[in-house]
Length: 113
Length: 110
Image 1: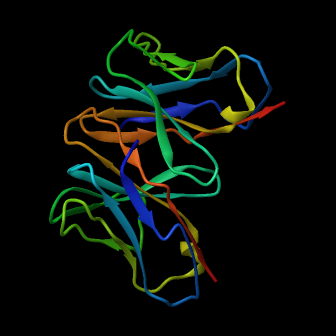
Image 2: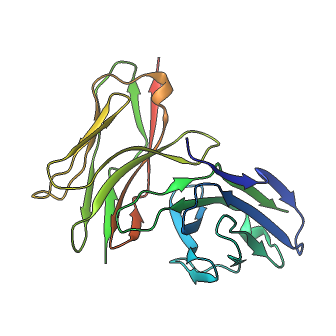
């Protein structure tokens, strides 16, 4: 069973608030990812990291930012939440290497009113 | 670039029916292929994988064969159960980069 955790699981917040979605993994994986999942269930990569102090933007433009100060921790921050940010956010991690599968957290369902 | 194309859903079957969810891909190099499953309210879980041509991945009665000649990795199960209702994602990894299909929603009715 994958050891990757996301908190909170559900968040309802007002427009303009700053929020941080937490993601932690205990598997020692170098690579970590954030996906946004829309109601049609498609996954969109918004950020990824290949190690400490390494972060990159993904395929889908996002107003969120990420940091990777510790291997196990990859938080995502929205400075000013808007209703368009309402979505499911999934965090994942994988070992280094070119063919290793990703392990996913349970997700955070964010609703911005 | 790489791409994964899945059979469009939703798919609705009766319990004990045969399941096929088609998946084809385009990729440079020699990708590894995966099927993930997502149950309601949860993240994705790896269902099975195959890392080279002609490999067959299998788990929980599901199986898929890596077909390089047809660039396919179709998911099959001989007899579905209500508990198999979920969203299924086909994915590939090539040169360390992951590409996911759009997901296929399966509903199994008793």
